[in-house]
Length: 207
Length: 207
Image (cartoon, rainbow over all chains, first blue to last red; front, top):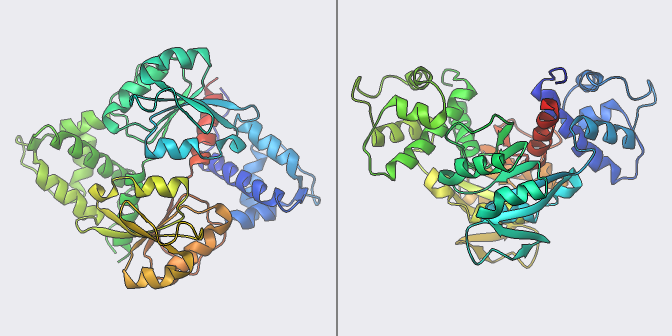
């Protein structure tokens, strides 16, 4: 296990990647820490401190080669090689994800799963949709490392445990998983309703 | 401005709401703090501490009336009245949101905005789609309190400032907003690529 880096630093690394994607489109090849700072509305010294966690890269007074910096950050985040993803649930959110250009971020959805018969056997954006009862086998066969859960909340825990049985290494879930899982693996949540509710609280608090 | 409550407590209140929605479907009318604790995989005492932030409600040994607890939490979160929402960007994510049952959480998307001519004038799930150049007027006319940004990243800051000009009180953005905004209002992010990247980091760290 590597040394512990604050999550806020890791999140800023992802913002640096967004900045790099953005600046690359202009054709630039060199980037200064102040470019990253301006993009993220943070201080120059914070950028330099974040990057120093991972050793020196960049030349003082010259800046960073954009390609080197991108490679370096992707290596830290473990996306220097494509990570294979299985998606459970092809409803509104699942369908949006299948049409989302995740591959440019280093993630490839290799298989999707649902229980609705009219979806099974179809492809969306090239990704085949299987019945959920094939999930363990396909996660194992295709060596899917990441599972995305976009099923209704009542089904989320079962789906998570099924993915774990299939050998998944980490889960991103759009539904709250209620019970403890068979095995402890990294789980992250995207809770759309909760974010709106917290925003509503913050708005009321200001008034 | 009210007293400061930790964000973790506010987030757990949203989880309690999920639990209440879940338990209401069983027809139950009374809830114990241990039901909330089990649902969220946290301790009973943490639940009681969270709820005590907002004064005593519930009867010792009897538990909470589900309806009262729901009303109380919704009041704290400012969703005891429906909050009106404007959505910018009717792409994959925007379309998913228009089809998402946000109303049961207390949020009503009243208008959506895009720049693609073939979308403008249409309705999705009853919500009219306008051209983005009507955003200020419609935010003002309809008194939209919350803005959801689901446009490409390079357009996000302009859209945020336009919403602010329209009088929005808080923003939920799926794209990183790069520059400082005209006015400081609560902003929350849902960054799908970043969540996957952080998950990837956590997976690598475990190995």
